[in-house]
Image (cartoon, rainbow, N blue to C red; front, side, top):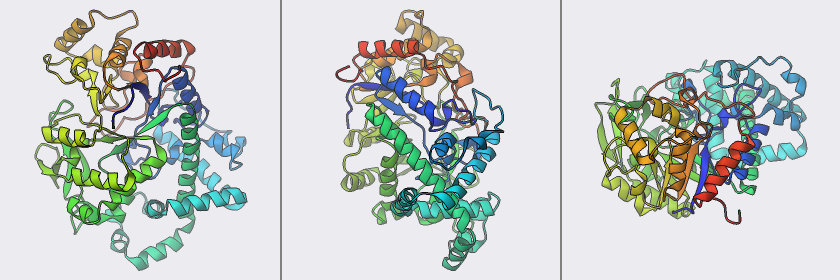
Length: 502
């Protein structure tokens, strides 16, 4: 569906300033919403909000439908009467510009378990009623997820396919017994999901009341070691004997990597999903709408054809393209949930068939300015080649920041960019590309906060294909100044992207 002319900021909640070592849903999140409103922005785009596993990637989560409880604000738990300020007395001095996950996780878990125990013993009737309502309405994913995480902890973090066969294969008697044995741990995981949902819902309501819609990210694939695959093995291409991925997801060699990207996720058993009238996918989109207003589908082309790499391969080179029933899927979703506000991440090797699927459902595609200057005037990422129904980015979470990109790009691209701009303005290259994005005819423009702040490679969020050392950038408190807001507001209004009546 086409969107009105507007703009917004890309920032994951983990990047907020916080005294707890990782961004959370506390006061700084509300200050950020205020910054967006005052700057005439109408969108806040986040990365996937699920509970992250190894490598802390939001694209490899333990559940496609749960929330990341490490984003829970401990200070809001004090407001709820579930913690006291003395619980924070011995916090270490966390880095201000990075999320030190190894240091954060045990401290945050300790606080959350204390809050869970306090909730169990001291919750008010109103709190208990809200908790039970959440558990009942979200039970279609919550029950499997809480059980999965409790067993995983009891198995010292081992992947589900290595558990005892009766647990790995979900035999009824074994599951009934383990639910009894791990009742306390299951309660904890349900509690933290309830609390994440409560805090996130409050923040989303505040954003919506201030004219900000949230764009959420739905990765096409889910992690192999996840509640989704464990609870629904028939939906995925698994080795029947070992439970490992028989066919792995990824992309062939491209701009980012000469050997492609081997993600390791199992691809879908689309035949089985279609037999079920895509029930799991419908539930997934339905659960996303609990968290966000607009859904960005990552790796959209996988709904037309997907790259499948056989088990045992170490790179993504030796894969093959296989057709997926994208038209049938989106027709069912439209029938069940209505015409959804969806953006399509259509980067990479895109065919006419993928474009046809995108256009059939009127999904806006993506344009990235960092890709615009490496070829000729036919380059589809050059602003004069855009359709109106598109979303333009300076760069994405997978790109370097604009300043970092400009400082390291080759001379040919740099010269083309300088010719296109005329010259670099006194505001610097980051703001030149922000101006280029906002002035384009694309209906929506989304700018990473790093570019608004004019930061370099030190603020990059992700290096595709790199397993560790990603996703940890945070901005420091006080960065979102009135001067910065004024600058962004003026240029946003100049190019016709301000809210109506502003």
